Image (tube, rainbow, N blue to C red; front, side, top):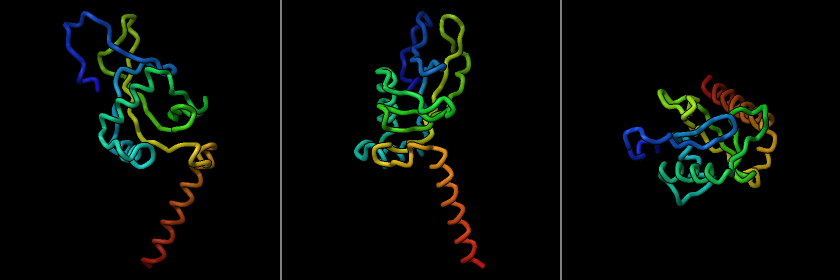
Length: 145
């Protein structure tokens, strides 16, 4: 999304939106996140640009909140849609006071809490996912022997 900005001889401040402690100036959507968005949120929208613009709109309208203080990278949209994002500093980009600007990398969409009750307790959900993967791997290894 950042590449679409107009270049004006650096006479203006970089555009950013505050999300917690981060000044988000760019959004990167991974392929995995776009697929999960299509599967779990909006089947009609399939492009990465549509996901990024949806996220920008949510950021502008202050609809994104952190799930818990302990969960660093898990966020909620409208207290329902849960997603995972990672932040990294943009090289050479600062605000007028010299504070760094960040790039938000959208890793995945976990789903809607209203549809998946398991998402209310993330630790239990992650342990359940690890357990099901582990048992699946054990079953597959038994078949090969």
